[in-house]
Each structure stands twice: as structure tokens, then as C-alpha cells.
Amino acid sequence: MSHTETTYTSWFERIKNALIGALIGLVLLIGCIWLLVWNEGRAIQTYRALSEGASQVVSVDGATVDPANEGKLVHISGTVKSDQVPRDSQFGVIADGAVGLSRRVEMYQWVEKSESQTKKTLGGGEETTTSYSYNREWRSDVVDSSRFKQPDDHQNPTSMPDGATFTAKTAHVGAFSVPGKDIAGIGDYSRLALTDGDVERIAAQIGAGRPARRSVEGTYIGQNENLPDVGDLKIAYQRIDVETASIVGKQSHGALSSYETTNHRNIFLTADGDMDASQMFKSAESENTIITWLVRAGGLIGLFVSFKLMFGLLPILGDLIPFIGSIIGFGTSIVAFVLTLLVGPAVIAIGWFAYRPLLSVGIIAGGVLLAVIVTRLRRKAPLSQPQPA
Image (cartoon, rainbow, N blue to C red):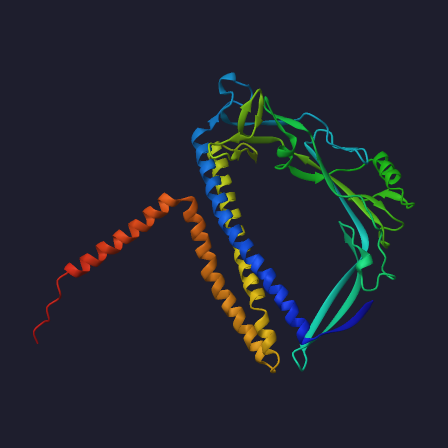
């Protein structure tokens, strides 16, 4: 099933859209510059907090709570025991002995996909031909079929149960109480087999008027699992288990919570298994570095897009003459790329300097001093004498 639609955009409409795009590009440029500067501050402050925590953390026996360590940043390792049974209150499914329970829901739905081809016309306009195709797929969210180009023949249900994760409110690592959601975050997932009672409760709650049965993954709601129909549901559960965990946090009346450093950053580290404090801090530092570079990459991509939007009017003006617009468009892409390489690192450097002014001044002064020393040594170096023939 497919549908084709052709639209025409005049040269003046393209100019109007380009001007709007230039304004959006300017806002995006300012936002990306702010993001890059903020990211450098976040990375430096996080590094300082982790360095402070690594120097103050005390490894203690997790089997007992020592009042002498009250308020201190401590590191423990121990066996995990959930204080409550994770439960899906909507369908009544439980995971006894686990720290968490995950529900995954998929519905068979119509999905619209589009492919567009644009060609330029005389006078600087554009003609766009778009082909829409419709297929049925399993999706974990509701696809709004009212927005389809042909909604009448491809209608989806308007609602479905959401996927969700349910965790114990608290768990114990050795003798210490910790938030259950933090322990579940490092847990291992495994399939939870449902009982006939679970399937009956799920079917009663959904009330779709379709039969429900146990399947390999969990529960299937529909007439035929091998020939699914639009609106059929698959509901599966996974239990989240942790046998041993390592925690770094503030000791507070037999519980572990976030520790606030002098620069007002919070430290609460978790790891699966028995891991010493130094490894946990090194892992946190590596995670901080990865996040820093990912945000930098996102900021640089945003800068490139913003420059392209700001220069978007030039190729449209050139489209009045065949092929000129394409050449200008290629040139603006190169200019946007060069500006990204110039502005991006400069903004990152400014952000780094802003949060480390003394170190930055020291590095600059050291570089200038080194350059002066090298220059003077070259001036004092004796010229080599020519050898006699």
C-alpha cells in the first residue's frame, strides 16, 4: 500500500522559509555555545568532586554499621537483599526475591514511512514528490494514525499499556540500607515466567475482548500469534537481580545516601559485584570523560547545523541561475564546516579557561616563557664556520 503526493514551493516561499531558518540558526548557535561552555564547567566540577571523594572515602566492613563513621563518605561491598517484593500494581505481577521488575509492552500497528525526492524548477522553485508506504509492525509506543496521509484505511488503537519498571523502595547491602532504584540500576535482567493467574489478571485489566494466552515471552493478547492483527498485544516481564554490590555514599543512621562535596556536587556510586573504592572512582571519572566528549560532539554538530541554517538564503538566491545554487550550497557547507572547527574549539577553550583561570594563565605563561628561552638560545648559538675547499 502506497500513496504519492507532489507539492510545489515557489522561490519566494523558499526565501521566507530560509529567513525563518536563519533566525532559528541564530538561536541554535547561541544555545550550542552555552551548552559547550556549560559542559566544560560540568566536567571540571565533576572531576573535582570525584577527586575530593577519592581522597576522603573510607572502606568499611559492610556487615556492621560503625557509629564512628557517621556522616563520612564510606565504601562497602556486600550481599544484596531486597526489603520489598517488586510488584506491578496494575496487573498484579510480582518478582519474589528480586530488586526490580520490568514490564515491556508491544502492540501490532500500522506504521507510515515516507521517501521524498526534490528537484529544482525554473525560477528558483522546488518540486517535491513524496511517496508514503504503510506496513504493520510491533511497536512499544502508540503510533498516531490520525496524522497519516491516508488515515481511513490504516487506523490504530489510540491507547495501550505503557512499559514500566518497578523497584523495591529500599534494599540492604550487608547491614546498610540503600535506595532500591539505585541497586536495580546495576542489576541483571532475566525473563520472568508468568502464571495462568497472571495472564487472567492481565486480560481482565485490558478488557480488549480478545483471548489471552501464555507465550514464550510472556502474554499474547489476540486471536493468532502467528498471524497478528492490528491491536494485538505482547506483554513480557523481566526480573532484575543483584547478588553482590559495592556502594560509595554518605553513612547516615545505617543508610547510605548522596555525599555532598565542597563544590556542592553529590557522590553516590554503585557497582555490581565486589569492587574496591579506587576502581569505582576511576570508572566514574571515565564515565565523566565519555559524557564530556559526547556533549562536545553534540555541540559541534549543532554549531554546523546552525551555520548551515544561517547561510541557507544564499543557495536559494543562486537558484535563479541553473546549477549556481548547488555550487553555492556546497560552498556554504564548507564554510559552515570551517567555522565549526574554528568556533567550536575556541568556545570549549574559553569555557575551560573560565573554570580553571589560574591553571590556564599558568599554562599560557609557561608557553610564553618556553618560547622566549628557545628564541634566546637560538640567538646565542654560534654560527657554523664554512669548511675550506
